[in-house]
Length: 128
Image (cartoon, rainbow, N blue to C red; front, side, top):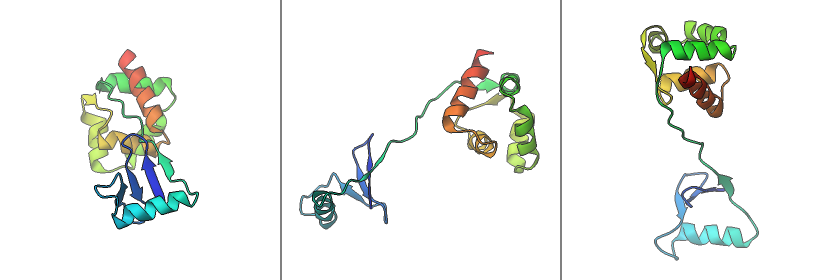
């Protein structure tokens, strides 16, 4: 029913995304309803935003060598062949890969990699 963001302390109503706490007014209807809900013994869902690392960009050779070491190169090449034109262009012609490029994120997800695994891939690639 409610979600508490552990980083910001903001509580939102799940159905609408409306911020209910902290509130500018203790008499705000949504804030009052939230407090009554908590006093009835309920607990909001705890949400911790994902780790946001910002590793440096890696070269195409570093990325391909890292994927090869992790036995992911063939899976990525297969995913690229059925991906959008922008992903195919990125894979075939870019000189660097950036961790937070939406195409990199989508490609990682397409081969079953979690954000933490993509971070680890960039760390490995950066070390090569």
